[in-house]
Image (cartoon, rainbow, N blue to C red):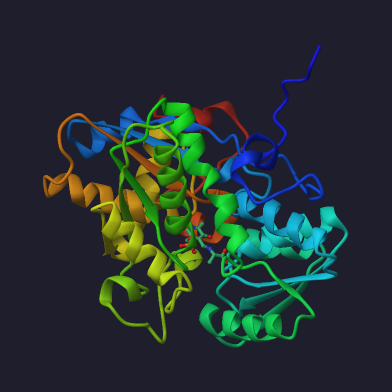
Length: 356
Ligand code: F0G
């Protein structure tokens, strides 16, 4: 009997990816993530539409980055690279470190000092990457990494490496495969803008191949303090609670603009307060715990619904890019609840429960 076990995105979508028989597949069985219908959240928001969350937190390193990284590290291995390197706000570095470990490659990550969520830092250290915290933001780190890449001594696995985008487009394929169609709208957070570029490519490819019968409108969301694409100019000192998307000069700026223009979509920004409200809401109403960046498109959806911009009967998908446990500090600070400490007696527990 042939195994039907999931074998990762390269295996599943091989004919749509730049791999050959000679490519050594470095996989941690990424992809095949849940598409969760969230009716409680829609009821809370109000409006007549169906919402599905593409929950990328179930990937091996708990973010969508693994889709691009399986391909980037496989291709690096195929070319005989010894060292992979990236700049990161924490998720790319976690993913690069894991896949490099799997491939027996050395990994170096450059992170903005003091602006990395705790879980992401733990990942890169545990996977054994050389972890460098630079006294500067992501944009500066990426500039250094690109310069190092030009020496030819290291393989850059940021999304400036085109195969990263190729791997990430498989999330759009999966959504179409899971829904049996493409959505009417796709919402997602935008930082370095690789993912919006990748999804749009995936949706277009499936449409061109006749597998899906429509193209979604792509709606990207930046954090108000880090919204260069929305504001039309680089932000020198980006600031937001959503550290994953704390980026002032996105590498795939043009890709994001093309996705929005070609899909008749939109790119806009939401405040940290809106982000944190949506962050709590999706956890409480649906049991879906995401990191703050994922709440940007949800906050954007709340706003769009209130503005009457989502027609009745629409099918909307939104990417939840990373797991809530990545950033326990923000979760604990924002949860609005604290554990109630009581003596270890039934009576004390009953009192807290309101049972007298
Ligand atoms: N959501 C999360 C959780 C992310 O980590 C990122 C980007 C994004 C959204 C935005 O995706 O950059 O393709 O527009 N994180 C990168 C990193 C920058 O280094 O981990 P994007």
